[in-house]
Amino acid sequence: MGEHSSDLNYPAESVLLAKASRETPCQATEEKTDTFRWTSCGDFTVEVGKQQINAYIQTWELRPCWLHGLDFLFSTEEEHGARFYHYRARFSTPTAREPIPDTASVYFLVEVAQGKAQTLPVEVRFMVESNRLVHTAGESRFSEKWLSDIIQGKASVRRMIDLYSSRS
Image (cartoon, rainbow, N blue to C red; front, side, top):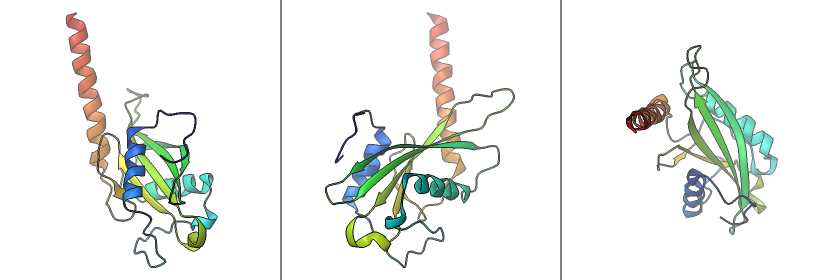
């Protein structure tokens, strides 16, 4: 993945997002039909990226019980001159009965073009934990079910492990 930080334990989703971005480089144009206005490549910073991803998540039709936290993970310099910024949003539905529930993650990659493309908007892609489908922001309708399915799957695995452990 271009220039690596000292941490080589990148999430698989980050690696897949970067691969997809390399295979279909930034397609940003001034005329993009997405109603969400992403910042220009020239104005992008890690903090602006975090603010914009949080604002983008607010456009998703999620019930209010879903809470999320967003973290910047790392950035990489690519051979074609772009810089990739990786973020992870972790979602959960905490309750009084289960204040620390399972989480489901959505990984984001913000591609910032270098050179003459500084006035164009950044390109944003995302993928849901344990899913191989790469979405381009504004071209996919996010489904709350994706998060629910991940959390239900984790709960099922935990129940099977507990059942197996109790037999030992």
